Amino acid sequence: MPQDVRQEQAMICVSVATGTKCLPHEKLGRAKGNVLHDWHAEILALRGLSRWLVDECMELAREGRDGRSEWVRWTNASVKATSEEDRRKRSGIAHEQGSPLQHSYRHNEIADNQAETPQTTPTTSPIQPFSLLPNTKIHLYISSAPCGDASMELTMRSQTDSTPWEAPPPSDTLPGRGNFDLLGVVRRKPARADAPMVWSKSCSDKIALRQCTGIVSGVVAHGEGGLVPPLYLDSLILPHAEIVPEAIERCFGFGPQGRMHVLQNRTWEAGYSVHPLRVEATSRIFEFDKPSSATDTAEKGGLGSSNLSLLATPTRQETLINGVLQGRKQSDIRGASCVSRRRLWEDVRAVRRSISTSSPDSVNEGRNSPLCEQTYEGMKTSLPFTARETVRREVWALALKGWRRNEGDEEWTL
Ligand SMILES: [Zn+2]
Image (cartoon, rainbow, N blue to C red):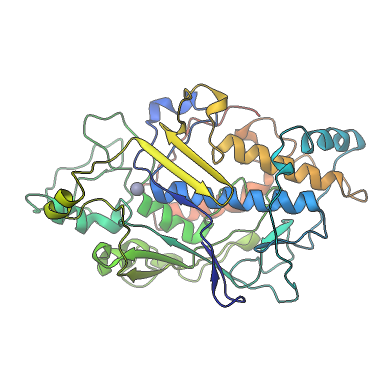
């Protein structure tokens, strides 16, 4: 939820989500960008933030340089087209019937005369066409501690016998919920022992990484091919009972006790730098939170977890099951969520191309442009992704050791 401190602490919720599942690794090859890999609530909510940003940028692109948004603005970066033919094609894409570019919603006029802040913009000249307005802060509220390292003590306490056991994890995978003797390590998503293997990393690990890479999906914030610069969380807000201070420091911290310590004050190219999370406690309890005790369970009528997942932004609402829209098969392209890899890449390209079309003095963007890439793999390995990839590799090598990529859903086209 971005917070604009210029307007008397104005705050809006741009993304809310529920969810507890992720995609088994064996299904990744058939996902084709349509199926979400991970819809744990906090990860889905962050994808919703990316979706909201893309929608804001779409609206600005539709309105042109004079357009105004409450939260997003044009930068001075110029976006370049490749040829007259490309411009014509791009114009068609940008204005096809039903294009999200035709969505319309109200914006307030805001004087845009404030300096850039290092929190939301790179220190060099902007290379993305849009950015959040200065002094906008992003907060994430989670009703339960994220799975993985930040919640290991809580998981231990919830066991009938909280004595740690020391069975070693299988040599070919990351530990899940078990192996309580291992603290500060990268874990995969917790799952039942008889469930298909998942390679998605725990929410704790993903949030820890995003203190360096930012929280916006790679396709939305990747160098010259994206729409906005890397954006970082200002704070993570949890209920009091979900915070174990030593776990939070160990999992996310850049101090002496934190596993991110070696990266303290690190900066990288293209606006990437370390943004330590501020973890805050709240006494307010989410009304529909999972039961915290037997008494609570009785009062709530024996609530259980649901296979359904909800995602909502100010302009979108989806009910998801198994990573796709409810009622659609995973193999059906019409089932792709608005936050799926496919839909985000599709719309980022549409915005970039519509901007190129409207820039008559633009020049060739180059063969490394993600606009030219045919496959998702090609886009992710293209030059604009280099800086982000460098950040990820360094964090994995130095702080989140053992991180294993969840690969298998890259060879597809739009
Ligand atoms: Zn999780």
